[in-house]
Image 1 (cartoon, rainbow, N blue to C red):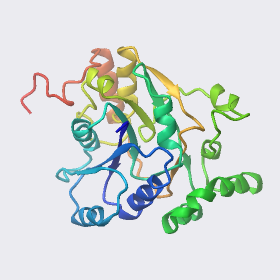
Image 2: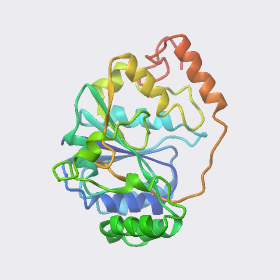
Image 3: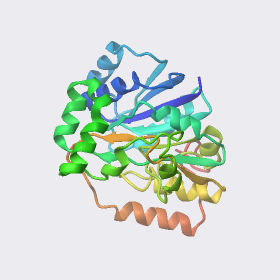
Image 4: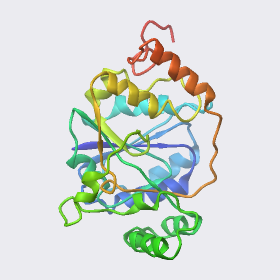
Length: 273
């Protein structure tokens, strides 16, 4: 196998089904699927057992004790059978060449990073009810871009541009400055060099992307953009934003102390936990 595709989920079977259905269209087939659940839902377990996977798969669970996504991600890293790890969230459907492009630009020196288009409710519903709609979605997005994109956000991120076509200069010119945890990949060696995701974070945002980004930079890794190459469609749902003040303060303190190798990660360093 060439890669491990890690899907972080929490108790949303319709979204998970849409993601898994999109994997059947992937041009690159040689990868394992790791579904890492921040909980242990019996319904999710039954669904996964009944789903007809094309790839090797694993389903990892943990007790539902509040937001512990970083622990779930570390669990997946420990069980991954390959050296290249691709991370997506449980609300993001993948373009057919998503895995192919992450592997095309895989390099131990890089964090391969993309973005996502945030779909409106009607476009999301098409992906949720009919998997073959994925093959028509770029046409749908183009029509909406021309006649009014409505509630779709970052629509320009939803178009795949071949790195071998006459428009290849577009993704070549599109850089990326921030890491988004739902569309990134890197080597197992790289994440072990900073001891994984920091489990000190107990709220969403910062700890699952920005925190590992600055720590990766401290060990010499750079971002490699796959915007318009590894395309991702974020399904519509109400945002459950929380105040990021606490996480931001935690991150700033760790930066001041230069703790780019976290203590509460893949291994527990000097802690009795």
